[in-house]
Amino acid sequence: MDEKGSVHFSREGKFAPPVRLLHVPLSENPSDGPALLLVLDGDVHPGGTDSQPHVQQLLSNLPLGLALVDRDGRFLFANDAFARVAGIEPDRLPPYPGDLVIAEDKSAVADTIRRYTRGQSMSGDIAVRLKGDPDEAVALSIAGVRGLGDAAVLLGLKDNSEETKLKRQVAQATKMQAIGQLAGGVAHDFNNILTAILGYCDLMLLRHPPGDSDYDDIQQIKNNSNRAASLTRQLLAFSRQQTLRPQVLQLPDVVAEVSHLLKRLLGEGIKLEVEHGRGIGPVRADPGQLEQVIINLGVNARDAMQAAGKGGSVLRIETRAVLPAEVRAMRSEILPIGEYALLSVQDSGVGIPRENLAKIFEPFFTTKEVGKGTGLGLSTVYGIVKQSGGFIFADSEVGTGTRFDVYLPTTAAVAPAPAPAANRDDGAGEELWGSASLLLVEDEDMVRAVAERALVRHGYSVETARDGEEALELFAAGKRYDLVVSDVVMPNMDGPSMARQLRAEYGVMKILFMSGYAEEQLRQSINLDNVHFLPKPFSVQQIAAAVRDALIK
Image 1: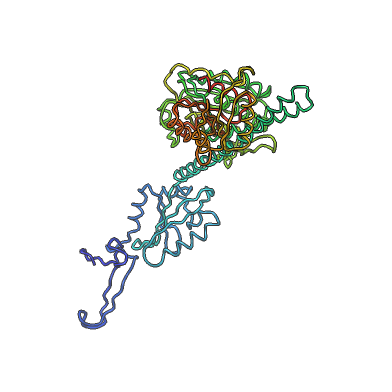
Image 2: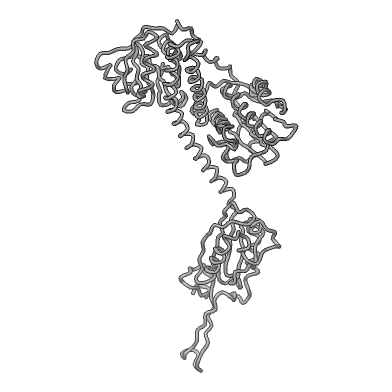
């Protein structure tokens, strides 16, 4: 009993609803004689009136979805917030809570409510799927109550759609990151294999000039190896591990540059419409990779419109400025507030089903027929945009079309970066010859063998080592070289660790790194000045040109 004279069950705490005690004397002496003590629990308010209307008035004003259920499991009351989350009209409340959920969840709801109507006050949550949205599970909170008249159970329905959306976005981002790491590793190993194939093809072509019976076969092997190399570049693009050469540029200029090629790719049956907004700030991106984004989105749109089979198909490309106020109004959890240049590509194709929309940026995911798509087009776009610091969103409606929005952050206008160096294959053959002494450090036997043969054939004196430790042993034995050509990732001791130790012990050393990973990804691990980089796969001419450049600079 508390200070107000109210009686509570101690097991339910001081905030438990009070109970009524009735003392019924059984003898003429009411104070000392035997008596019957009756406990009235839950049906009568201490003040003598039913409290349920007051509770309903209170619940109706709360923003939480709440409802009251009697001991038979029937609805007594539900506020507007509960009806809104449940997807029903407030004045069309069904008889039972189980009528709100799908058939598979009805028995679970009924059994749980029945259990909470008995015994002491307690609460819990169960996950249910509403009829209005059977694909999303929501949390139904259930609490046993007393002292509220006919009400025995309080239900709470929480709208956790935003929470579920955020969880799905985090899970998707984590999965994409894991797939990207896997793709980057696969591309690295595959680049080693392609380096050996392309190198041996080049060596064989030196012995089998045009007109030789084997020339065409060797050339076919080389051509297909180059196609495979382009696939690895797409994998590296998806995993954001390719080497970019960013420049400050205007987005409309890039679109204009690629429009002529895009028209040829679309064909005569598809009309291309381009519209540019005003006041678009410059962006910092690799122009070649940005063109690849537009081409991939355009080709993907072309295939979707051809599949739709509708006449008058239109591909619309729009560029415009997006100011911070507009980003703020979007209330996006992903897009930071700032100024962007928007590239929007919209088609009138078949559209993308909702269940596939979250998968379209995954590598090798395609809805096209076998042999008609690699599944790397959109994943390449995703990787390039992300590596450029941008964001990409897809919106689609089946039967209407799809729109891709690419947001690239604008930058302060500065002078364009210097043009990329000329292609390594442009050098004349006689310019690639040399007589310097080289140390070739490579753990892959096939790559080491083909690189050694290529460099020896160009006049260099080459000694090889399988890892960094073996290279250090050669220096410790008194050997010296004009240039060290080394892989980056190797067992025992990697290339950068070896290079740092060499420079610490033997002074300035010219170093050329080669790797199947991208230069941008390795810069942090290399962290050395005055080093050169050769990406794999490379040809005989490319490694000879890279060695020549490293020696003269």
